[in-house]
Image (cartoon, rainbow, N blue to C red; front, top):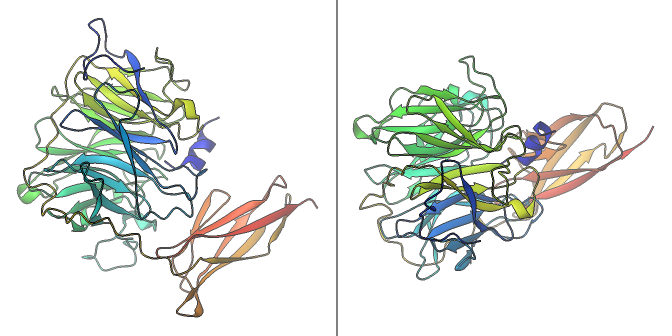
Length: 468
């Protein structure tokens, strides 16, 4: 979740393995488990063997702290065990993992944000193995037609989000920032673009949940927001359907449902009847919505904005859903407010059962070697950020020139395409490592400039602000 933008928009164990009490009615909500540091749960994964897994996602207040994966029994409560994810770039506080699925051997498939990769976690040995990488795409406006690229003229870093297996053993993965659906070939390796369209171009919040339809003939995609050319408001999300053609190729995309303003739909689950239960992470929603097979809205669980749901923990930026028996487990991320007590897995009764997860016989093959996953590309050095001017004046519009460099092979060199964040804005450096941003401040609070680039440790600079 991009909490900086969201903030601007915002003004005990269960009894039984997945079975709800006999008196439970659709919408009844209870606490499955609370999530400890570093917190920010994003997707509760129900393994075919009944155990439940939760990864910790981006916590900007914990740079240097790697992500964790927690294991729970089917009854929830206290974690049974936990693993720390190796090889992450934790320098900028952008690290985070989601447990998206499992392979034919029962290993967990993790989607990592920093670096952008997929890992396999062997629960018996505790070892992590590399499975896939997701490249940084160039804008489609700058490359030849046949080259994989980022649609809509954008230029973001890769961010694998949710995934599912196809019958042939390939893995589809949504990219939240680059607005494409990746296909990882059977056995893993470098991902290629399976589907990328101009209509996928998003307003900060991109492609999220991905599931097979109840009849397994289509792929369902959730787009949290839109900047596409089909007239939809940029602040509305969409549920999309993509038919699976021969060879597991994508067919023509159609819209099933359009959300309300600021709903920001994220992960979702599909029932055997074809109903969809989607988490609405948006600040004016904080709810779970139930949709019929045709996209008709049937119900919303939880009060809007405040998230009151009858359990001790309200919905607070719920970000995903997965069936466990007749209830869905919802990861309560508290992405905007960052309320530690609200970071939990909630169980919401639905009164129906979900579509069984597809895990093909060869998923994840060939067998991993069992060696620990390699670290991210070794950092050559810390980035250096130079800003001019370094002092701003309250109320005065100022053009700040930025230059990002690093020591490479003993010489200081400009770093092109480095990503620079300042005051909620994001810019990329040009071929000479330079970028500009126009700022106007109303307070004297200092601004932090953060630059990131693959293969380097994040660099920082501070802009001071004074009164006239």
